[in-house]
Amino acid sequence: MLSDLVSGALADAAERRSIRPLAEVEAAALARPAALDAVAALEPAERVKIIAEVKRASPSRGALAEITDPAALAVSYETGGASAISVLTEQRRFRGSLDDLEAVRAAVGIPVLRKDFIAEPYQVFEARAAGADLVLLIVAALEQPLLAELHELIHSLGMTALVETHSAEEVERALDLGPSVLGVNARDLSTFELDRDLFGRLADRIPAGVVRVAESAVLRPADVAHYRDAGADVVLVGEALVTGGDPIQTLESFLNAQSDPAQAESAEASTTAGERA
Ligand SMILES: O=C(O)c1ccccc1NCC(=O)[C@H](O)[C@H](O)COP(=O)(O)O
Image 1 (cartoon, protein in one colour):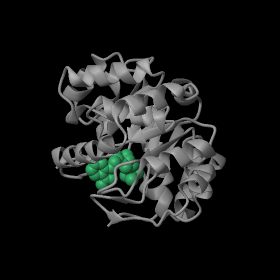
Image 2 (cartoon, protein in one colour):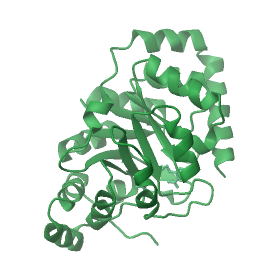
Image 3 (tube, helix red, strand yellow):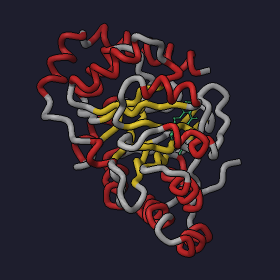
Image 4 (cartoon, rainbow, N blue to C red):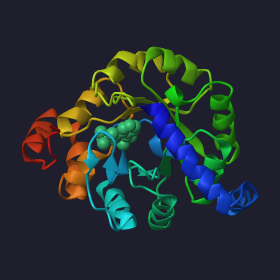
């Protein structure tokens, strides 16, 4: 359940706060060099853009990959053409950490997303202190006024929020924030079911000027083309990049998928990205 994931993330944050109090993390956040402009990095272009994720494990799939050097993986993502890196920092089910984020930040020159179950200001300050440029806010996990407060805090620290939705009602709640970047996650975060067509059903509700991100369920180049055809500016890819052999080649096949349908077909035949059971 999503609520369990949020509770776990908050319990872990409370433990970290007992060691490193808010004032200290806030000072570290303010001392960081300015965040990179994630909106500029993700703005619509001729080709779809990719946020590539450092993902060791997940609640729906269990262990995915032994990632001993997240910074090296992120560098290969950048080399392969990713526009931003997503780092899962949740520890219990995803085996991530803020250390991963800090290492990735130091290694790449593109924006870095803290992907976690953010539900209190302390976690936002931690994100900035570790060097994040983008922070995930999951609408389904946050009531008002907390959602708006966290959104405002992210922007006041110079970062960008990726506001994630999974229904028309959540898109409306997200738009009330005036977001720059709005995601539709194909994965229901409580049942883990995937619906690759959800993005297409919701995309028209996202106005021009807001970067549209299709999240999850990309296994092959044709899935990228599917999201692009439905209006995605950006796709966020995790599992296929950590389980699919050479991440640079996989990324290149994904980036080429939308510009040339014939190439997409041939890339699909050769890509090593594995099919989910
Ligand atoms: O991935 C999961 O199983 C999961 C379960 C519950 C909450 C969040 C979860 N994942 C976070 C994500 O949304 C994905 O890591 C991300 O969008 C990439 O998805 P994919 O390409 O399908 O690995």
